[in-house]
Image: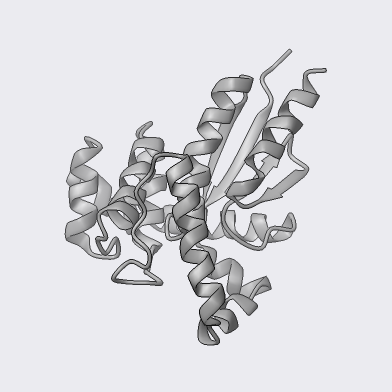
Length: 205
């Protein structure tokens, strides 16, 4: 029997996605599932099907904001991650960083690159839209500088990122992180990872 496949649609600009990024790997190790990484631009998803996210940012509710900070800290503690909230730049333009994930994927380094982006933004409070920050991430992952930045500007890389966004929307997704088990079973959010694990295990029964 082949390993179940988990598709993980993600944008590094979301702290909840950082949590899920690490947890989905633990789930995969425990269950023997394979992960198919699908970088997206969550802003493109919001623009198309979930504009209420922008309205929520404009109309912040103080008690809810305080709870979000607590909730995020609780989840970060559970996974032994450090997350700065809010970061100095939020929301951040993650276009180049997410294209960089696709460039890294060409070189078998997507996980290393995505983790470095998450850590730079959420742990170290760096602006991942800046070329010098991406250059340091690129170097940390052992990626060639010229190839990396040429890849970010490559029309095919740009098109692939757009295709990932369009596919997620077509399949009913509305944000990041979105996880699919066996192609059709969709889960949204980091807190759904236990359900993802259960769904994978059911496939083996």
